[in-house]
Amino acid sequence: MVFLNPVETLRRVAFFAVLPLEELERLAGFCAARRLAKEEILFMEGDSCEGLFIVQSGAIKVFKTADSGREQVLGIDRAGSTVAELPLFDGGSYPTSAAAVEDSALLFLPKREFLGLCRRNSEVAFTVIRTLARRFRYLTTLVEELSLKEVSNRLARFLRDRARRDGVRTRRGVEFPLQETNQEIAAEIGTVRDLVSRNLRRFVDRGILRLELRRVIILDVAELEAQAAGSKRSASAERTVLAQT
Image (cartoon, rainbow, N blue to C red; front, side, top):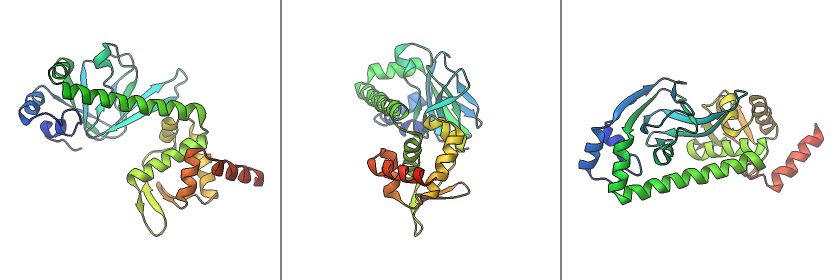
């Protein structure tokens, strides 16, 4: 597990990066370190929010859990990101839960110090607003995906985004490691594990991708993009496959 100097950790956060070194050092003096093992809970829905969590290393998932136990992942925050800032401003409790998806290290900045900084520094405050606006835009897109798109489209978008973030172009195609299990993918795209497995097999059968253990090789980038968009091309190909089964 990697621990960075608190000042360097704060500097990696967009709305602290604008601060001079002296202010970063002052804030770092109020921060407390926190370690989480994989799958350990950071906070639960309904807990009171006492301050701002900043990811130093590892990854934290923010999620909702239904009464049935089914989980919907709303986002994964990695190094340089903050976690669930909203309750700091509306005074309410956490509307979601958060847990580590791998061994993680975080800093905790008390609410009083963070809100005091926002009041003193308008540039920081506006950067925080932009961060919240980006999260809202992402959640709006997520609602659209879950409401209006099929599982195959959502899975294709998930794979396309991973390819863009981690993919390396080789002679075989665009390759990237798939670290998430099918259950974790299902939680992120709003479905169940069996449908993830079924649609992965369908993508393999159609020659869109190849799976080698937990490594993905995208063979047909254009068709994966079409599937992610839910375009007429992908719908037509899907009907052809169904007609052959």
